[in-house]
Length: 151
DNA sequence: GCCAACGTTGGC
DNA sequence: GCCAACGTTGGC
Image (cartoon, rainbow, N blue to C red; front, side):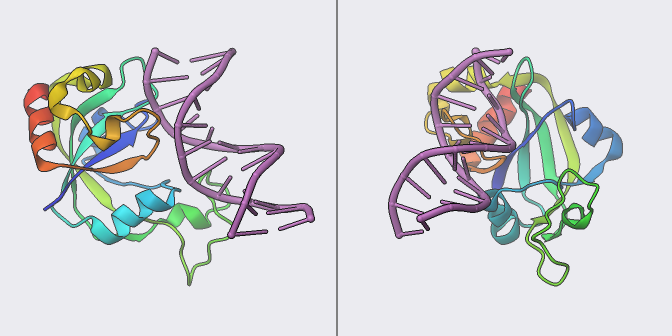
């Protein structure tokens, strides 16, 4: 099984939203690398660090679980959606998604600043400067360590 | 709000 | 296929 980090802006969809709705299709990913991770590498049962981006204190706030195989993201065909992609056709969908369920919420946030300052997490892809990928693989040891920090 | 770091688009 | 222009992400 693999581990991941998924980003979400809490104003749009937070860990508390996920806890409430329990399950959520991870729509709106419009980056090929991130799509390929979902399409090719994510498997049911994989766990992901849930990261809040674009907020006062960015950082990891909990854990979500992959509960589906990749399947087409319906918002790519919805003209009114902000995720609409006119170049994607129904018979050849360009964008896919997986469903996540709520797994846990940390007692305390593991902030980006804390992770960057922690020598144990040196080299972790998600915290490198300039990284904008909304989905990144995480090593098992980093995943477990961050969960421990979160409580 | 600014801006660095990327990713994408389109002219050539 | 190159690369300038443009758009977006996301920390600060």
